[in-house]
Image (cartoon, rainbow, N blue to C red):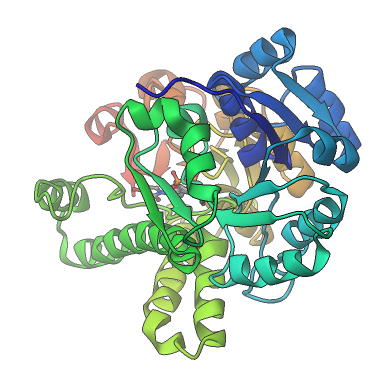
Length: 440
Ligand code: UGA
């Protein structure tokens, strides 16, 4: 067992990735300084309050803020003076009007911190970036670094899922590091994660381009798996086959596996959609666009699910949504999250409102965020209140609360017993036995 050697770890960006990473680095025994430039976010986090919902994370954050192992600041000078290892965890959103990733925040961290460094340092990128970014920034660091100071950049992509952020960070399937041979990055990264590497987490070291592509390829594969099963679902629907049984049966094959084979409304969120687009854009820049043409289809199938869901709703409302009252249960892009970025559920709710329906949305965690993006939709504080007087109930995010709904009781609240199970998470038999017209 390697002896734990606590490091002074700086984390730039306290969004989903950075806040989780900072708290987990403290949990691994390191001293941590989180740098966040957004004042409101910084003050909230310093106070132990997360600006987003992630099970268990605020407790972990508070524990380490209280013990002083985790601190929060906005000072790059303080970070440069104090830190030994510097993680970049800022966002790389889709560029406005383009498919490419917007790297301005990553670039800005490098531009600001490197000239302030007066000792040798290791910077580890965690943000999802297009292949070639680490190489480009390494060249830039060579220009920015002070004389006699060696700043080494390596990439350590993150694979955490929202809703499972802590366990995915402290017990990941694997750790990936892309670095140049002969540097210190491998040794220092090993030191950062020694506790979990000793517990058996595979530590895969490779060149920087490969590490960047691992992340893009992993998310592209997951997206492809979802769109694949959704494409099969359409053939099932056309042929009268049962997609649940089909997915279940193919999942028994180890080579296929049963995870990520839930057919339904498709994927959304701040990662999968933008990452498959950025991967295509980067492949295009490298002259390899035909190789990832498949991802265009994956994106198309996925977006089409949303249109299809609106069609099913319209059919359920006798061909016309105008004046119909529709209850939408679920607004976050997936359960156990309040994230509504590119949320399929909200997108469908918005489209139905555009077609004249009066839409009432309920979500256990995401109502505040939804109201900011779609202020014109109506929101209810409970599922029952959302469903009161509804002509149609749609379950669009598979929160456990919805699969536990009592269809008999809910049947007495609605005007018409019609339900669209957009995530195939309801017990069809129970709903039909309670007299509902069940569609999926
Ligand atoms: C995804 C990846 O799973 C993480 O490994 C990665 O680190 C992260 O993106 C990232 O790049 O930061 P996340 O966006 O949290 O994580 O969500 P997922 O659990 O992957 O779900 C994505 C979407 O796919 C959700 O809208 C979900 O409802 C949908 N989905 C998932 C399906 O439609 N069917 C499935 O079978 C599984």
